Length: 173
Image (cartoon, rainbow, N blue to C red; front, side, top):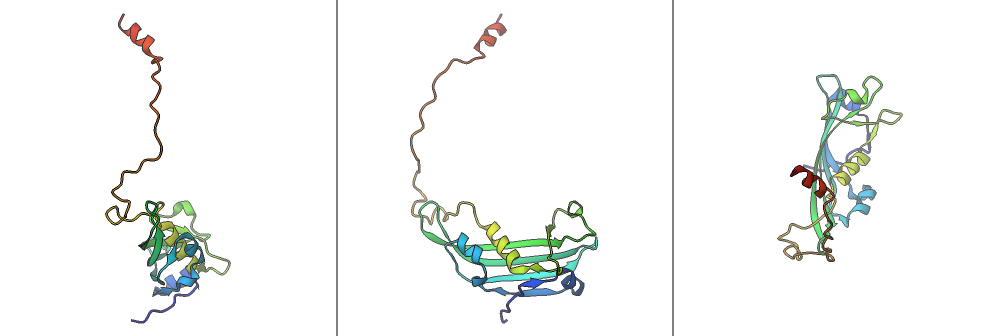
């Protein structure tokens, strides 16, 4: 199957009315902010999107995306490959539906003045949010994984008298 480039902007309401499905890729060169957040973006991002309407009549965009990035291990400093595998469900905010009325499973998304969303920006945001806070190799793969790591010494706490010792003496009377 041939990989097709996904459009930059889409109208989720129109796509839901037609019950469209998109399967394609976004070139890694499009993800500038992601490239700044990682060592390297190793491959194009594969994505699948499905548009429809739920039982409440809300427009729903469900998707799945995969990206392979290279991260710096916070333990040893070496680069390692990390597979980002994300799923998401969005519904565009309209004047008919307030944000607090949406089901918890749906993430609200704002549309521009033409009723469209920037699909590349949405995918990039989702991938950045899925990155680990402190990326590290698996402990058995890291060259510093089995080492005991300590930084500095912890001074013993001073032994001070308990301020409630007086209450203990009253209790015994």
